[in-house]
Length: 250
Image (cartoon, rainbow, N blue to C red; front, top):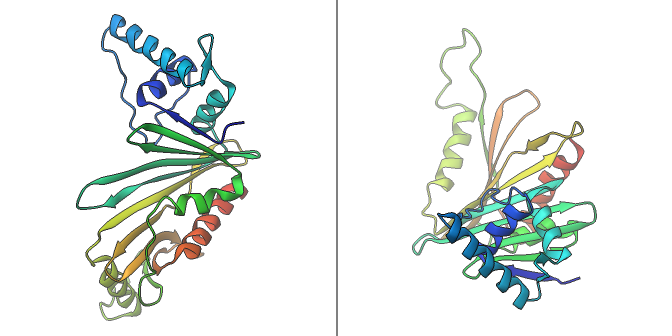
């Protein structure tokens, strides 16, 4: 079995249609090539020749590894979508999906050559996701949280000097820093009823003070909690791993 497959964007478009797969999953933006039937036929012929010459198709049929990889990227038990700006100034964009089903995992990453697909074990998903980002030191300080609980009837306005407001100000003091990289991870899993369920996302950003994550969740009493945490690589891996564990047991 090959470890890495690279497909042009045209090939992804054509194969997705031929295999009847919903390949345009977030954050992939795959255009459809060939406005007219004649142009579409020409694109399909070019893709067929491209795949044959690369050893990724035989007799007009994609190799099983190619079909399996695209199927996994389109339909999987657990998926992590990674999107963001790796350089705010130049607009360098990150668009990737990391998925797993059973004992097989796949990374799909948009590059200047097209879609690069790497096979992996499902246990590697959190680490592979974090390694899509450039290295950065952890941010300074400690984790801070802001709670946004609904105001009970008759309670009136919150005290702006109370502990909840202190938490909001602490989070805003970090999120207000200038960011030169930023992005987020979206985790999706299949619940026990077979329904696709999206888990709380994990946002990240790099500042002159280092890297931080933002995670929004709910406390046991139903209050919304937003936590900003300075993280290194291991810290991000553990955070993503925790979200993945929740996706697998729903």
